[in-house]
Length: 161
Ligand code: FES
Ligand code: FES
Image 1 (spheres, protein in one colour):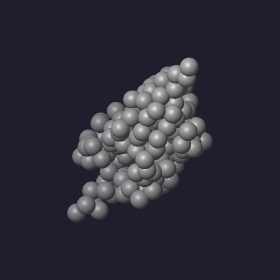
Image 2: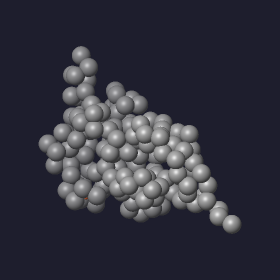
Image 3: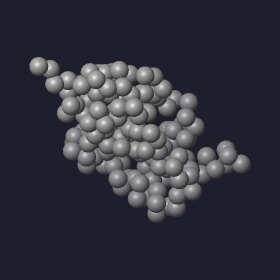
Image 4: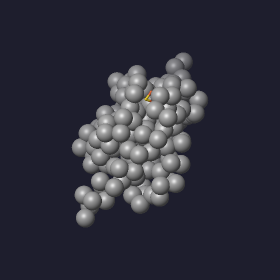
């Protein structure tokens, strides 16, 4: 008897009906069932944050969630936010501040930062640093990422005036 389960979620604005094992993670469902490989899997135990996506607008570690937990919810991955001003500002700032080296962590950082800046546009410098500490980067030393988040925040404030 199959143990698979049916589930539906909205991914990047598109309805997805999937049949998954109960233990399939959201990260694996996005990568393997939906073909959205921009969501990276690194540690697969909730530490590195490379798998960060937004579920109903909140950054979550997709390796720690079962896919079925996203049933009925809206999931946004790095592929789904091309027109999102916050993300565009972050991408530009990360390029300018050399906050990308090997790039493995980058989609997770972008989703984390975009989710955090959307939820709280007026974060303090200390809060931005705290957000950056949530994910791991083996290359950049974090300061370029923090500076990029600060610059993105400033440019979004100017654009909103
Ligand atoms: S792969 Fe999910 S936190 Fe590292
Ligand atoms: S840029 Fe290489 S792990 Fe972050």
